[in-house]
Length: 172
Image 1 (spheres, helix red, strand yellow):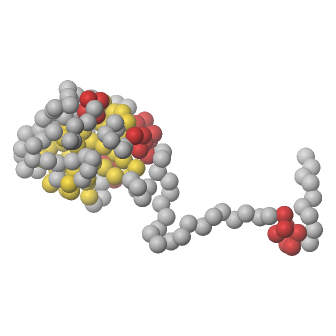
Image 2 (image 1 turned 90 degrees about the horizontal axis):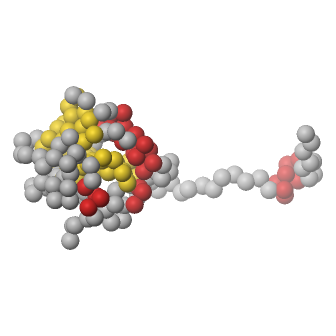
Image 3 (image 1 turned 135 degrees about the vertical axis):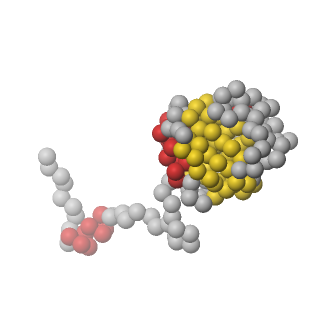
């Protein structure tokens, strides 16, 4: 039931072809990833227009838990909760990961429990372009429970009331 098209686990950076994702998510997978054995990172424009960061691997243990993420020889620890359609969503402040995925050279994922990874060398060539294309669909966030206000529009009637007459034509 969780089977995805083979392109979902292709090495490199591309749109996520997982069901329902389309161009709202960029997926970067490790070298030598296959539909059966893969390690990927997904950057996604969420429904609330925030940015989500996900781990998607073929590990039998799943992707929820503590992870060490190394980008260009710098390692930081993060927590991931179970999610769908990807295996684990990073929680907390992961701005360091997002910035370095965009601007780094290579990334590695390592579960904190020390279990083996199926494939683990995610090249970041093309990641900036793929991530920016996916996140271009994210609109500015509106605080929850705050109504969206339409832009102020000045009508000819408003002009007549304010300026005591019609707006004169513009001259060059």
